[in-house]
Image (cartoon, rainbow, N blue to C red; front, top):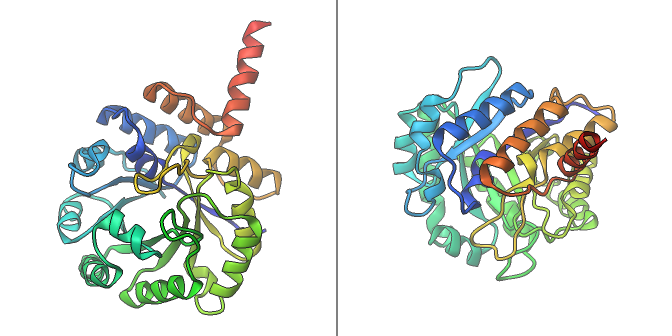
Amino acid sequence: MPEVTIVEVGLRDGLQNEENILPTAVKKQLTEKLIAAGVTQLEVTSFVHPRWVPQLADAAELVSMLPKAPGVRYRALVPNRKGLERALDTRVEEFAIFLSASETHNQKNINKSLRDTYPVLEEVVQMALAHGKQVRGYVSTVFGCPYEGDVPLRKTAEICRRLLEMGVYEISLGDTIGVATPHHVKEKLKALTKEIPVGKLAGHFHDTRGTALVNAYVALEEGVRVLDTSFGGIGGCPYAPGAAGNAATEDLVYMLEGMGVNTGIDLDKLCEASRFAGASLGKTLPSKVLAGRLAAEKEERAR
């Protein structure tokens, strides 16, 4: 199988859902550990208003503290022009915008209709491009909405076309509430890639029902080569009740390595980074590979 790019989103998509707010210095340490493990694509924070996401209120401070590392790219989520203006004052190399495939979830998440969201995003994209920055797009609830149920493919296709026309270089398709099954993913991607080039698409699967990893595998079979994951499998969505975390980075790396795909990520060091994150958050992280490592180490110490 060709090379697969892993986008680590735990620092943003994961930490924004945690009750315990990590100190900025701890986030910096965690980022350094992820980089030491070989992670090169990191979405590190979000420039949304601190009132909405207090866990990421230190966005500018954190970015100013992050190490400069060869080959490592830092991304940040921006909701609108104000967020982008804040982000442009930092050294983030790339930005991400977001909207939902379902009208109701978009209203809950952004407080705007899809029609009213497009001009806001287009302004962000054009301004970012004018500053020489690339922009990635997220489309949530592609495989199902907690309020509307199934989301018609035509809506996703229309949104993807609009984003590409704006100048977004890649679109991450989100199974925000973790309802997708392998058959669901295969059928959606087969249909969608008749209209949207598969090279422009990425997968973002949540593990609410234990299907994130197998859904990621099916996406790879259908030609997707970029997958979003989070260390330890943390994450969720405040506007998708019951949504669990993303596919765990450890679990995906283990699977890919077993398939003969070199991810460039050291699994031992990655697990160490997640162990540090779990201890800092005061919780057990859901990654299966991490749990197995910790259990084996505990047994070894008991001998």
